[in-house]
View 1 (cartoon, rainbow, N blue to C red):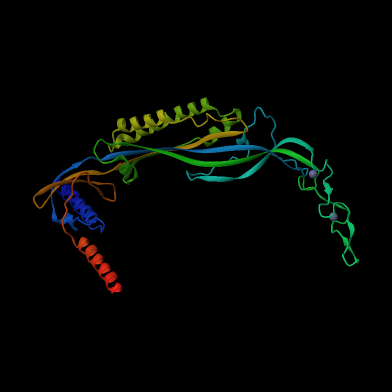
View 2 (cartoon, helix red, strand yellow; view 1 turned 90 degrees about the vertical axis):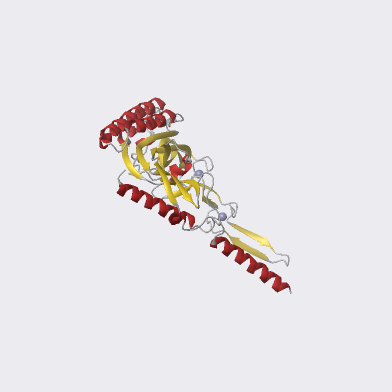
Length: 352
Ligand SMILES: [Zn+2]
Ligand SMILES: [Zn+2]
């Protein structure tokens, strides 16, 4: 490393330690620690984080009966139950990786039948008057009171078929788009993986695969688990060839990234396993692969004649300590003790 680089790295570590040690709840940690220590050794342990995920659409359908008003359901009618797919209708996934829920829509199954409630009449006996329309009540003082029901003819519209007399069997279709992401790290040091996965760094590789048109046309013959496996084989090689074409800039070693990508595809569950035509149909729409370089520095430093170590990691220069850290009586502790004494003094004073 050149002297300039060493100086910049050390300045980053000093800043990180200052930011870390000023935190109020680290009561025993001397604040401004960065400027009070001597940095003895810095080892660069940089880590790579692979984020991979599938954006998929899940369509599920339920058979229901709805009042039939004579509509033709143009473009929304099942032609052949053994060949149709829920993805024949209104298939317009968003152009992003954002979760999204589409409005429910209906597809006609073509079966029209007489409403059971009203036997196809559309109207049933009025519930208010029981069909009497007019009736008389005799009051206790001998007077009569006459009533007339607002229904007029003793009937009301059937609530099942809303008066149409006929019902239609349909599929009520729900669609939900989700992004399912997994993260893997390439790192051999002591810093916990959970900290690395959540920290930011610089993106050194990204690739997206678009499968929308392909999977929607494949859905017509039923998108099953073997179609999913084929698609993933293609995605796997597409991403790997993108890695090798972009790895020429020497920022990363393709072999490391390729190992992580292989791991992802090996562990990936088959999204289409539960697929059943016209009932549940999941489709992988697109994929995303990103590699982030997360800086990790293993730092050894000296404070008041003793040696300590810590890690500075991520773009935000967070600090993680495994083991001992300097401890002394600090102004932070003084404030806490001061506040405690005042509080106790106040309580005692109030009870006098
Ligand atoms: Zn009535
Ligand atoms: Zn009815």
